[in-house]
Structure formats: structure tokens, C-alpha cells
Length: 434
Ligand SMILES: CSC[C@H]1O[C@@H](n2cnc3c(O)ncnc32)[C@H](O)[C@@H]1O
Ligand SMILES: [Zn+2]
Image 1 (cartoon, rainbow, N blue to C red):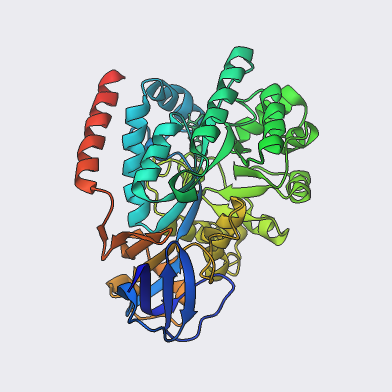
Image 2 (tube, rainbow, N blue to C red):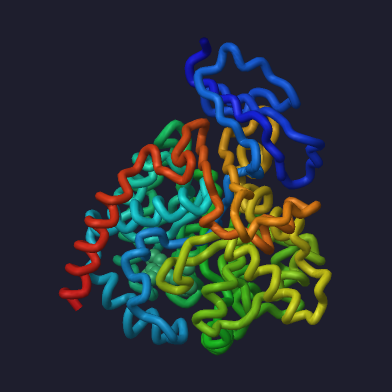
């Protein structure tokens, strides 16, 4: 008997760029996919999962969120980004502490695991506490401390220091499941000096950069009047852009900015539900993809979405492009699936490790149950079934880094009852503090 081996048998595999014929077995050894074949000897494995009636996919990848914001779900709805942030969210965030962010992150981790996301990229405060929640939950994460200086030099030093401390204490934690990026919040909250320093640090420490860019028309007007340039023109001029930059939102882009994004190989995290809910606009995703730009998917935080269901987000992305271009052929189910898997991995610089079902890749795997009314009849296209018919509630099993985090819809590592109770208490206290 081999310890730490899992055999998943009778699986219909849906993975970007590979067509698997018929049912396959997958052997997981420790944290890696060791073998994929129609028939694998099951006599020496420590655990067998029969995936009959289930679709097997790579774990989904959410490239832009603020996990602890689950605590603010439903507390500030039906607002523009400007009012949402200035009048509600930032005043509430002033009362946060590490314990609140930890429990908010655990609540978010429960939601991610239950809906099939195994990797997320986060930008927030008290990130050591978020890292603790990630470590305990078994999920994979790219964490960045959200830096805002509004031009204040002392604040800038403090923010940079916080992000570097996070890097030193958390990079590689949890058997390498945690990576740390730099997180300047946006071109309208981070000064030019901060952005230039971030670029220097990214080069020095080989760290990625996570930033919000071109989310609203107000941002375009404000940056244009302050800098005389549109956001991506300004970021290009100061030398900030590069293939290690993940820009969330990117709703309002001129043709010249699309050229700049392409030239610098910037990665885009598209957040359709948040953009629709805050009435920010519709990102030109199909045009970006036509230009061979890497576009992945993010939910943004649970306060502007209001959930973290990536399958729902992918469907929304596809339908929104169809209706905005009046072309039903854009963002097919296959293309959309790749945004939630291999493009997500590419966005985070993890494409050699995750994002597809391949021997040698990390065993980040989910199973979706087809024995559910919304999944019948079995479609001839598995990607159609997943993108257009399924939702997070159809996820049956979630494995990350070779460890089972949910099986038969039951969490195996986290205690969801305890987390719900602690999260409700934290929300009560935060509401009382307003
Ligand atoms: C400095 S930590 C991150 C910071 O970002 C805020 N935030 C959440 N969603 C958005 C969004 O869509 N655009 C801009 N800022 C956002 C979050 O509340 C934190 O303050
Ligand atoms: Zn955001």
C-alpha cells in the first residue's frame, strides 16, 4: 500500500486544450498527478474515488478577490464604486482587525471550496491572518497586501514594508501553496512614487503585481485630468507595466491602451458580476482575446458580487460578451472554461503547476455531479454542461495539492458550522461598530 495515493476512476475529464476520450483513471501521488490512463491498477492505492456520473476538471482559479470581504456581503448594495468605497466600505474597513480578517477569510475559503475554486488571488489588509486561514483550509493562494498611500510619504514606506513583511513571512507557506504579490490598490489611490517603487521591488524580488485599473469612467476622467493620460498610458509612461502585472477590471480601454496591454503582456482579471452590480460598465473581453491578451476571471469581493461562485461568474462573462457584441459566437463554452482554468494559471504565473489535468501538474482537481436536474440530459459538450448549465452547488469533490478538502459535498478539513457561527458574531460586532 502506497501512502498518500488517491485513485480517481471512471472520470469524464474536461481539461483545457486536451481531448480525453472515454472514461479515465487518474492517480494522485502526494500532491501531484502521477498517471492518467483508462486503466490503473488499484491494488496499492490508499484511497479510491469512483467518479462515475461526475465530470472531472482542474480546480478553478479566481484571479481577483478580497476574501475577508465576505463579512461585508449585503451590507452596501446598489451603489456606484465611488459611493460604495468612500461612504460604506472604507469606513467599515477602518474597524477591521486580524481576527475579523481571519474569520472572513475562512468563511470565504468554505465558499470557494464548496463551489470548486482551488486557487484565488487576493488583495486586502491583515494578510498574515488571511495566510493563516489559507494554510489551515488547504486551498492555494496568491496574496498581496493592498497598498494605498494617497501621496503620503510616511504611509508609502509603511505600505511597502507591510507587503515585504508578508512576502518574507508567508511566501512558500503551506507546502508552497502560498505565493505573495505586491498589491498597489490602483492608479487613483497609489502615488506615482509608490508605483515606481513597486516596479523596482517586483524586479528585485521576482514578485508579481496585483492592481485595479480602469474600472470606472470616473477613474479615466480623474487620471486623465491629473496626469494628462489615460490610466494604461500613464502606467506605461512610468515603466510600471510588464508580464508580471495582473490588472483587475479593465472596463474602460481605448484602442491605444489595448495596444499597450498587448505590448507589455499584462494579464487581465475580468470581473463581470462586480462590474454589473456597481454599474461600472462592460469590459471589452472578446476584443482583448482577439488581440491574444491573457484574460482570466475574478469575482472581486463578496460585497460587490455578492458571492464567490466562479462557475456562475464564467457563465456571466460569456453571456455578457454575447449580448454586448450582439454575437452569440463570442466566448464559447470552451474559451470561457479556459478563462477559469489555464488562463487563470497563466495570469498568476502558475501555468506549469496548475490549470489543466496533466501528468506532473499539482493535483488540484474538482468533480462535478451530473446527477442533478440542471445537468440532465448529458450534453455532448462537457464544457457546455459546466459553463451554461452548472453552478457551484453541483460541485461534489474538491482536491487541492493532493489533499481532499471536500468529498460528496462534505468538507473534510474545515468545520463549516463553527466558521458560520464565528463569522456571524464578527459581522454583528462590525455592524455595532458603525
Ligand atoms: C487596499 S486592500 C483592497 C481594497 O480594495 C477595495 N475594493 C474592493 N473591491 C474593489 C473594487 O472593485 N475597486 C476598487 N477597490 C475595491 C477593498 O474594499 C479594499 O479597501
Ligand atoms: Zn477588487
